[in-house]
Image (cartoon, rainbow, N blue to C red; front, side, top):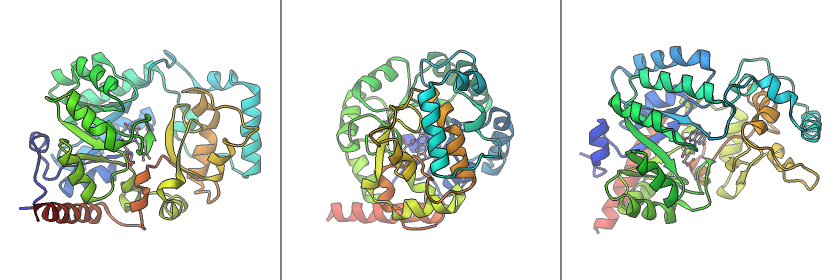
Length: 361
Ligand SMILES: Cc1cc2nc3c(=O)[nH]c(=O)nc-3n(C[C@H](O)[C@H](O)[C@H](O)COP(=O)(O)O)c2cc1C
């Protein structure tokens, strides 16, 4: 038996290792489950019409292995919204700036259907996503950016564990007051939307403020030693995101993978240019252009994504070597080339066992 033992949360979920992985790729979720970890599928970028078939296929491949689903539910989004109307109301200065960038970088119009070119985050979309999650076999429902009391109580009634990504003690207390069971303490180091507190400082504070709740550490974590550090700080596991982008199961566009391999922790930065909310990404000339002195301040969420969604979809569809970027954490330091989830989990476990042995003297 591995020295990296299952924690009570692992036992509750039926997984071997305290390794939790967030990904937008169903293939990563399946590979994580087969490797003994717990995968959580992000639905925030899926076209609504694709979700039911996607979940059916995922559950078939999982063949009973446990998994979770993550929804991004920001507050203050429109009740119903269509992208065309939202786009028509965007400030002219911003539209002209983005047109200029698309010309400067020679970005072709995307042709494939994608969330970024056809959807707007709205209450109507969130209601639809909620129903799918509740109907699914997911053992855990995680939410980020916003909390919805109705989703939490209905998930509990359906026998699902609830989790929330939190970036401060205040967030954690709010989530607990609404009944959220598992807290993911996600620090400033993380890929994606983050707050200002680093993982190493955040995690012990969240553990202390919610002594009865299982807590997971997230943000900047990509080695087994860091997983052991999370356990030492009172967490029941670590939640990793960026690392899986190196796995073939993530289907990362080759030029993005090159950028991640070349990227160091200091090549990630927090910007509002991606979504309108502070989000850590791997920098590219597209992101740098938003830092130039004549650039307008990014709009809010969901307007910024309505403004830049075409460009983001184009970079990814054509794997544009110059502009392509993605959410990525300081953990990018551990991406050295293409690999598989199975090899990544095996390496994390070996590193964790070594760290535990070193600590035991
Ligand atoms: C490409 C990418 C997309 C992400 N999208 C989401 C998301 O939709 N919902 C969410 O809760 N977290 C999202 N995250 C954050 C992860 O859940 C996780 O907290 C983070 O990746 C941990 O930090 P790390 O990237 O340093 O491992 C995303 C992260 C990455 C790298």
